[in-house]
Image (tube, rainbow, N blue to C red; front, side):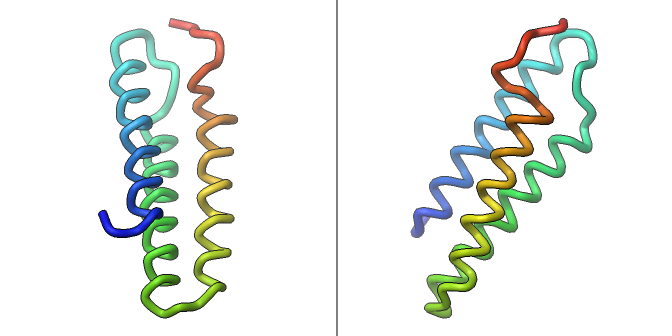
Length: 87
């Protein structure tokens, strides 16, 4: 836990875990692959950001921020953490 990317992705991943555990109690609403996509997005975002610090390359930071935003958008649109509950 050395970089802002470590902290940000762990926070998003923890929220993803809570959402998964909460949704696993009722009727099936989501598919497991949707959580896998979001988790891989967090992991790759973290890797890109850490590479940006290690190599001092702004391209990695831009990629990490872009992928992080895309991952959050995926969670917001597909998993709908604050949407109407169906179960």
